[in-house]
Image (cartoon, rainbow, N blue to C red; front, side, top):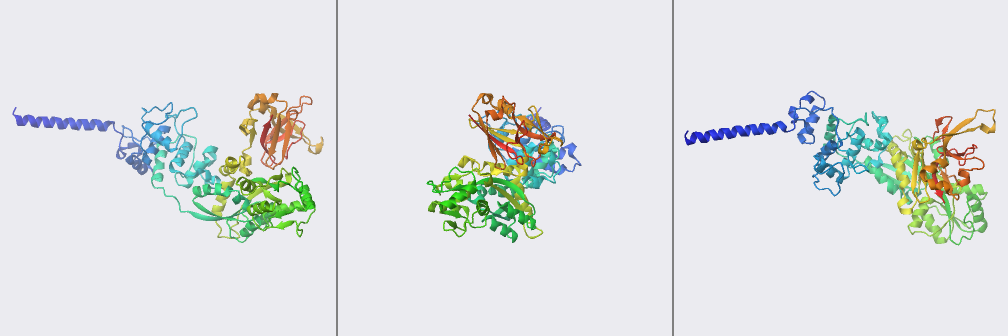
Length: 603
């Protein structure tokens, strides 16, 4: 064979080998979008082909996509990481016990962990091979997109969305964010495994996402919500998650309500119930909802010339103030605080106006507090604004009178009725009301002030919050344990029958609950042997009672304290009161129209 023919033969053999090598490599690669046989003709065919073409997901070597197959946690996170172009993390600072760096998905899962999109379990595992549910996937997508889920108006968004009633409580805000931002159109079967087709459906929305244009609305409110810093804390969270800019008009409650009557605000947040009820009765409000409460206190100079320190009855304290001739500064602005102050003067039988010791400032709470400090006078203030100014170094006035039942300070939210003013932003107003009264907003309200002042400045009081039926138990060590309805139901039920008006000829009402001593035994067994044990129980209406060990379990009489949650066999409604404290003799220890939410235990 001549040399030229030999070379030609070698080239041909080499070319054939290359062809076979190429075909061999192609046979083990995932199928390309164009050859996915089991998606042809499906309504989502184009979507799946786009996702596969982008490399976010892949087909199988047999030329299928398997659109109805479930997706594991690792597979879902890897697809999301690819869509964001995350760089793989080959050497994570900390590894999860069931996700070694040799695992195929580990580099991109650890990249997603570093971004905060997802986290491992408390035991240090990730469960990469476990299927991911639809609601879990929405929570991860919300994190990947950077949605501010804490400010979601959950009910407003989810009420008409298919499947929302089946969502787990923890997943509702993330699901609402995904619906609002166009990531999903329904949330059906949220607790079942997400399919490959459903996973693919996320990516066009992720790739094409554009934040909606920012809208605006006007909130007219009392000065205490602004001066205390509450609105500065919660409103930006609502704004970010709902693409809204809120203009805040901070004035007295009277002025805020007048602003609403003129149609110059979209929603009101105020605290003068009689004025609020009149606003609603006159048709200016779309609805009214309880939001939160704190309390009023009387502050004054440390020297206390009126000698009111330690008093708990506000009307009696006002009588002593008037008798002493000590200077009292009133807001004089028809605000909620001013209204409460005038109610107390009326209860005391005193007309303060016109007296030399009574000064009407016509200013907001912050200005009045600073004026009171400068003049070493007395005033009535809400606790939240007082703490913000006292701890902020703007004033130096001690609390002299507090804890009176008549000093409760509830706040209400009212969207302005579009039937009166069609131009009001009713959709945004309702969304704000939903946010403030929903669980995410109520949690924010509860947390406000704790870090800076060591206590919450406003207590959540919405119907939805009260319906969570929780009881916070604070141990002597400071540790806090929360008991919810399902926790309480695990204990044996003690039943108490009460005859209306003590008339045994009438049908008795049957109340059921758990003995407080049984809860304490489980939380901290050593508490039951502490004979000097005291428990301060506080209800949502501000009423409270202090119990000692004999109150909790009286061995001589057999009387025990029970935490009531049943009435005639049915769970108590919020209006009936949950959780109420009652003795086994049938006596309510606190106002039965509100529920006990906190027990502070002291030795």
